[in-house]
Image (spheres, rainbow, N blue to C red):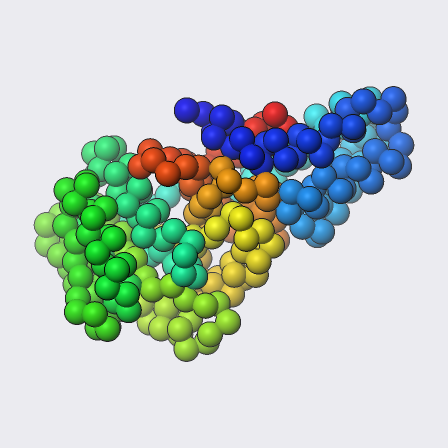
Length: 296
């Protein structure tokens, strides 16, 4: 199923906000006000909304645009342009490559790892899982269930053990067997707790002491949290050198505009999006398809 079909709620929400816009007879101040309201309602955020509309308005005046529908076309193009310099590829250059998954509790880190494992195995790559969330026994159990579904090795430690050592052991195991990837779960961290964020820095340092290379640190965010997700991204970036974002529950959120805010304000690309419960419902983020889906 296409990304457009998966994004029913954000698409309907944004399109509904533009309902009266398309029927306006001309481009006037009311049109710009309505467009601003629609973008803010989609959680694009004020700085990004202002930047978008400034560019669109300048182009509309330059081209003497008088049709509101043409304004929407200009907006669509400007949204896509936001992503033109973004590196959306997942980096697999290590031997093995280590991908760390970070974020607060409940955003879907372990589920994301399980779905991504399936995706990588299907593509012919070999994967080892590292159960780095040693604070919750349920987290190890959940990751083990996902690992068993894809028939991959899971390296874990005793409850409460040092997560850095678990991830280090997983990297060494993967290197010894010539595996391509280590996908490492980490404990849910509150972005306002400095000691937990310090531990996250340690996890990254230790993970790179062995044979592997941390080529991705993926921040998992819940799309339904909107602008709070942007604050989380800022804090985690300072602690963990975040290389990309996985945005979960995008199919159930009316706040899809957070994708634009993350890219615009932080320069961090959204690389993967979760759009459903199925194991297949983790998709590579495609900017043009995403923007087209928002406009219906």
